[in-house]
Amino acid sequence: GAGVSQSPSNKVTEKGKDVELRCDPISGHTALYWYRQRLGQGLEFLIYFQGNSAPDKSGLPSDRFSAERTGESVSTLTIQRTQQEDSAVYLCASSPPDRGSNQPQHFGDGTRLSIL
Amino acid sequence: LAKTTQPISMDSYEGQEVNITCSHNNIATNDYITWYQQFPSQGPRFIIQGYKTKVTNEVASLFIPADRKSSTLSLPRVSLSDTAVYYCLVPYRANNLFFGTGTRLTVIP
Image 1: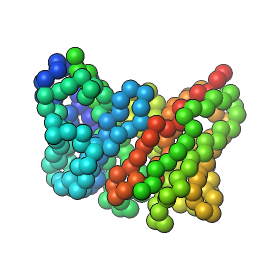
Image 2: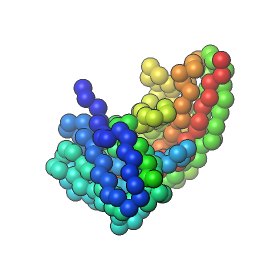
Image 3: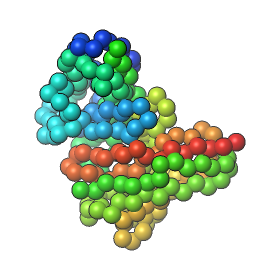
Image 4: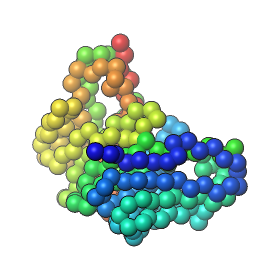
């Protein structure tokens, strides 16, 4: 079946602009995660959704970052007034509702964001 | 709060068995250990998961000692296509996974 889909795959924008990144999780996956991966680094947790609520937003680096999720489907990560340090790959993952953090996550291939 | 420690990099020749060990001293009673593989320009991909002793699938084996404070991912007879970054994870806190920098495995012809 279809995997996690992210769009756009690449985004280049000027410093100060707002960007919106989209994630379509696997159907039936109630949990959804956003991560940031800088070049050569590991994944940095940003936010977790269970359904359309976000019980853990602790990883969002600043108030310029926000995320929404519609029901148990698409999620959008928005970065306002982008800065050059926001340049990274933004990865989305989803997982079924069972077993919480022990449930393996299914990842998309990410959106590569470049801030000029 | 469980974080993991694993070697930054490893090299291996084709056809050899590769063992990557991960430390997770603060693993909680209910936590599973999960390993992911990541190729360049792709998201991580689930490899294997275990709770104790040994788990084997078509790709790898996972060995977990009785105290569960470490685990070892074993890749049999690696090929060039196994060159990737390998992450060991235990839940950091509820629904928050700490990926760290992983182990960069380079398979040499």
